[in-house]
Amino acid sequence: MSVQTAAHQETISMNQSYQRTKRILDIIFTLLILIPLCIVIVIVAVLIRLDSAGPIFFRQKRVGQNGVEFNILKFRSMYVNSDDSRHREAITKYMNGQKLGESTTGDLSYKVVDDPRVTRVGRFLRKTSIDELPQFFNVLRGEMTLVGPRPPLSYEVDLYSSRDMLRLSGKPGLTGPWQVYGRSRVSFQTMVEMDIAYLQRQTLQEDLKLIALTVPVMIQRNGGA
Image 1 (cartoon, one colour):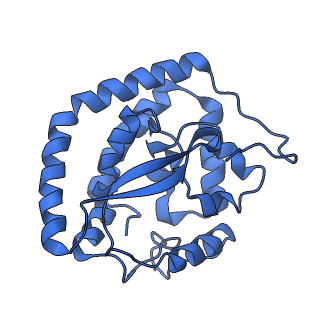
Image 2 (image 1 turned 30 degrees about the vertical axis):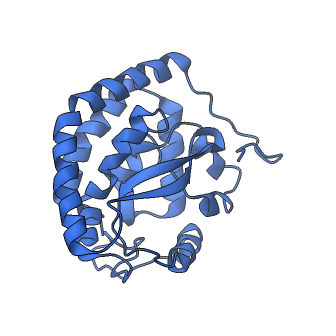
C-alpha cells in the first residue's frame, strides 16, 4: 500500500540522524524492560485463559510507515471470531467527526463503550492499555517505535485525505501526543493534526517527555475504555 497520491502536495521529510537515534532508544529501552515485560505477559496470559477460550495474543494487519503493512501484536481482549462490522461503522463515524459515546465528562466521546465483543479481562486490559504491551516486540522488529502516531487499519487509510496521509510519514508508535493528550477525548481531525505537528518537530527531547507522561496516563486510565 502506497501513501503517495496525485493530490498529495504536502510532505514530511524524516531526519535520518533523528531516526537512527530514535531506533537506538527503541532497542535499549525495550531490552531494559524485557524481563518485567515477560513477567506481565505470563500473568496476563493466565488471566486471559481463565476468562475465555482462544489464543493469548491477537494479530492484526496495520498500516505502518509509508503505507507498509505489518502484523501488530496485542493481548486478545475480545471473544474469538467477533464481527468487526461495528468497529468499521464506528471508524467511519469517527472520521466524519461524529461522537461515539455520550460521556458526561467528554473523556469517552470518541470511544465505543460497552462493546459486547470485549471480554471481562479485556475491558481491564483496554482500560489500562495493557493489551498493547506485546507491541514492544513490534518495536524490536523495527515495525514500530516507542513514540509515534497510532497505527491505523487498512480500511481507515482507505478513507484518508491527502493530508491525513501525512501521519504515515513516520513509524507508528506505542505512545505519542494523541495517546498522552488526546485519546478518546478528541476528534479524528484533531488527532491527525497532533500527529502531523509531532512528526514535523522530530525532537528526541519530546520523545522522552511523551514516554515519561505515558506511565501516569496508563495508571489513571485517562480516555481508555
